[in-house]
Image (cartoon, rainbow, N blue to C red; front, side, top):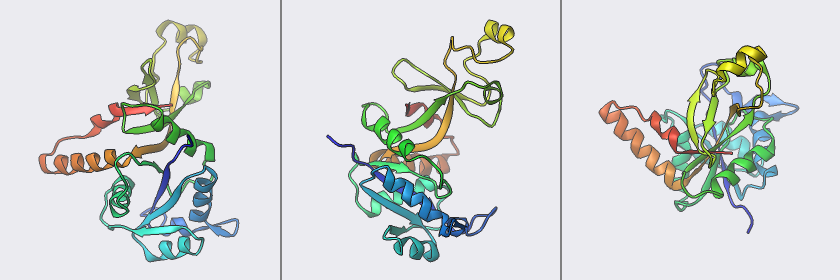
Length: 224
């Protein structure tokens, strides 16, 4: 049975650091066009751009890509994607890959891999990717988020510090990963079920009302 998944690309015009970023030209095409092409190469059943700006919608429509207009007040792309899932009435089991609108060079296989990771397990409603760390600089770089998995490939801990910590081996190897323990770096692409997104937005609304954190949802991730 073939893998079925949808890609939703959240893209807003009003970036504070670089306004109009999705429409900036790269090799004669707007950035968003390259991102859509990566999603199509991955074999997505549908590619949707979720935006709050008509200029972006018009640009992707000209490429033959569907745009869904979303609320301008969403705090993140995740909520924007959840609105698309509701607008299009996708069933709860629908797999949705969140592909950022400023990732024109992302390998298409990453998109397919994260969808496959979610589709081939039964416990989590969200999946993401990780890759082996083999360089000292990356392991000790606080900008690189590390993760520890359980035996089934589900996330246990996330940290900007080196984890797992090879106490004895690091002193002998000068901090270079030895291969005795796996060191993994997070790759920031996510897949969700539509049902998970709906639950997540309910948690966000509850947190806003109660002042509680919802960061614990990361324990529900499946990593591959």
